[in-house]
Length: 247
Image 1 (tube, helix red, strand yellow):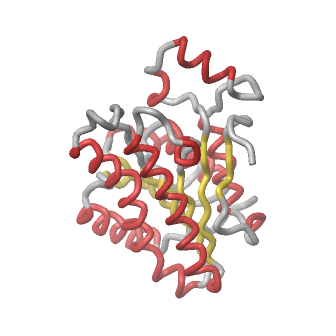
Image 2 (cartoon, helix red, strand yellow):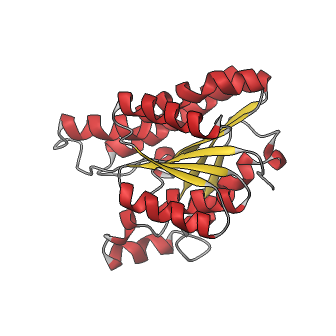
């Protein structure tokens, strides 16, 4: 699954799943533009990739800011010449029961998790159409498929990503561009480590494989969908959840 000669941009790349994705794509031979709000963590990631003879550059970015998205993609394309692979991974949570959820918390989650994916995709789609090759990979969630109490905003944003994925796949498939989504289940990240042990153990009981996933599990799936081995897969939601949701 060599990605030699390809250029990838990963949002939310400073930690967790995004960081693992960037490392895996670089390991597979791609040059990687890593984008997130934490410039310090991005620089550490770039150093790690370069220390393994990979090629990477950091681009500080708040995906909730449309102007920053436009300038960041312009800068990444200026540096690398193109973007072949886009991984829309950036995401946040603002959990609350729907009857108590503030409009600001709804808007911030939708803007960061869903609207940013639409805006980022717009920045790469014309060049992908011209070169007749592209991979767009959206990181959704099992909760975008099942819903989750206290996460109406998050579940809605992730369900929206699935619809966006399928719509884009239909629009650009004739130009050899694929658009797929990956739906992680319970993954060990900074976002989940704050949960209580009781909640974690309860989640594990619902997972047939009997363990939580790792960011590397998601990164491997991304590398596959970005490769030529997945050239006949588009509009698909790949469940990486240990069997938590089947069918």
